[in-house]
Every structure is written in C-alpha cells, then in structure tokens.
Image: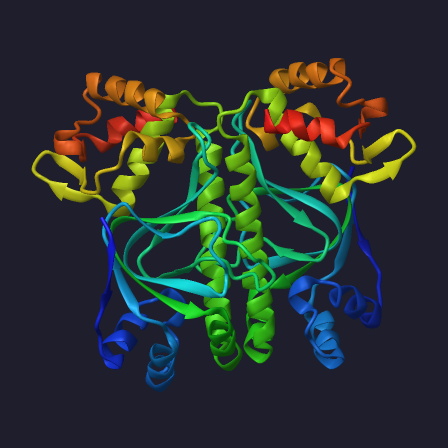
Length: 237
Length: 237
C-alpha cells in the first residue's frame, strides 16, 4: 500500500487528460498547456489515501485511471461513502473559500491521479468555457446518482441495501465471467458498510444471507453475482 | 396551494437574476439578455410541486426567492430529500442527455421560480465562463453538504438525526425570537422523515422525545429551539 510518482512526458499526460470528461472539448494545444500546469502524476495502490479531512484545498485532483471513494465521517458505523469517483473525473473541493477537504479520498483499485492547482483549473475554465459546463454537468450527475441510490436504500433492510450496492458495483465495474458477473475490486465489509450506512457486522450478516440465498458468491474476497436479475429483485425487496 | 404567473418587467427580472450565485459576475447587458430569454416567473405556494419525476429536462430552474426540496423515491419511508435548494440557486437537471428529471421538486415556502431553456443556459456559459465555474462550485457545495449531513446522521438514532436536521434548519432559515431560534416554515413529519431517512411515525416519536427533553417546542406547527447548544449536543448523540 502506497503511492509513487509516475514519470510521463507532457504528450502522454495530455493524452490522458483528453479522456477526462471535463477536458474532452479542449483542443490539443490547450491540453498540452494544461498538462504542463498539472503537478506530478502519482500511482496509488488500492487502499491508499489520496487526501484526508485536514488537507488543504489549493489543488483539485484528476482521476486519470482507477476508482476513488470519497468518505466522510469517522468512528464505527458513521463513515459514509456517497461519492464514488470514476476514471476521467475531477474531484476534491472546487470551492475557493473552503480551507479543508473535510472528506477522505481513497483509491479502491490501483489509480493514477494528478493534481492541478485550483487557480489553474479556474484559468482553464475562463479560457475554455466548455470545461466549466462539463464540470457542472459531471457534478450534477454525481449529485443525481447519490440521490437515486439513497432513495432506493431508504426504508430497506441491510440485505436489500447491500443488494442495491452490489448491483450498482456490477453495473459500474463488473466483468462478465463463466460464473456470472464479477466485481474484481476486493471491498472490505467496512467499505461496503460505509456505502450502505451499516456497520461491519451488519454487512457480514447481510452478505451471509445473500450468500445463503445463492444470490452472491465471494470467492477470494471478490464478489460474484450468478444471476443479476435475481439480485435486482432482492434489491427492490 | 398552487402557482401563478408573476408579471415583471425585464429590468426587475434582471435584478433578481443578479442575486443568483451563478450569475453574479454577469454584466448588466448580459443579465438583461438572460432575463429576456428566461420563461415566465411563477410564484409557488408552500407545498406546491415545481417538477415531477416524469418531467422533461429541456429547462433548468432558477430559484429567485424561497426554498425548494428535491426529493427522490416514493412510497412510505422511502422518500429521500437530500438536496435543499436555497434562494439564488439553479436547479433541475443539467445533463443534456437526461430525458427525465427523476426527482420531484417542491416549494417548502412561497417561492419565486423562473425557467430557462437548457440550451440558453449553455450559451450563457459559453459566452461568460464565470457562470460555468460558479455553477460547478455551487453543485460542489451541495454535494459536500449532502455528504456531511449523511455522515453525521449515519449510525445515529432517529432523535439524534432529527436534532441534526433541526440544527441545520436553524442555521439555514432560522430567525431569532424571544423564546430562542424559530424555523418559520411548517415542515410536516413526513417531510422531516424524508430528510432524516425515517418514516412519519418515527419522526413523530423522535420529536416527542426532543420536546419532552425541552430541546424543541412546536408552537403552531413551527419549530422553536430554546437552547441551540443543548440541541447540538443531542445531535452529536
């Protein structure tokens, strides 16, 4: 578990930036200028923190590859992971008046991240207004996703909430295998708990119930869903 | 309960638009141009729906005055109100690919709202990139607020969650009175439930407990908090 600086030439950086939602409209020369302004790329191992609650907000983060959980709150049962950052997204605090991140960002799979000073992001937006529009739309989609998931989970028991999150994980990051859909990332019960608003023990029990019902298998710490339709019916439960 | 069109000249409309976060940077002539493009202003009574799940996404909404709840999910105990729109905000779906709002927006106090075709918002952003930046920042703050509230509520019992939401309502919309802080909007127990993730009966019981402990009073359907510090201690539960 750790992170290391990745050496990359400016063209390679620009190419990866071109896959970022907010930067897709940028012409080649703007991408190169942006690549020159970004700080070093870092490769984070799974389960490695990218920023913590006390970190400052002078930089925003660009997830070039991987997957990052933004988690708030501490203490058992009170951690909340609402915001899952996908490859090609900008994350961190965009508020120039904020002084602390307040949240914790952690790579859940190996992730390539670069940072960009907030003022540089602002100057890119001012020169290329499409970037601001794309940023706003991407935040709007994140807000919408969070709202939809929370609404689906409200009033449901832990096994149904877990089924909701697992179907979501399959949609987002599942791969098709011989035995069904597989979520390759190894989520801990605590991490799943932060996503469904339960503590670790409740997740362990809920997972046992889903396993006993044949709805999920957990070979080697991964999650396999043999019959997605059946899991979705439980999610609606 | 209902809504009615409000006649306003273009200068009056432009003046109200200048109070909207995202439009604060716009020069006078851009505000006037924007005012000419916005559709009619409507005044919504408290408890009146502005859009529903099946409504299209061709327009975004500008809350010029008032307060709006964005709620997802239906059925008892599964409604979730995560996103509270404050006066001076843009709301609705910014995603040009979305075909349905998916959510329900309702005025919780009398509110003045105008609509703006999505393509017109886009052209304002393209001409005035500061608007896109401000929009992104405002969505980022909403995302952050939702995350903070959810994290604070996780793992807590209903009375503590209710105390969290009431302290939040006091901060956001409270007025100081002789007997303490007062939240003038009359929230129903169902609405409070959608904010804390409980059903109406649970809210009724939690409210009774807070009342019995002298932490809140509910004269005439409003909420009065005699001692905010004491309520905050309960919120920390």
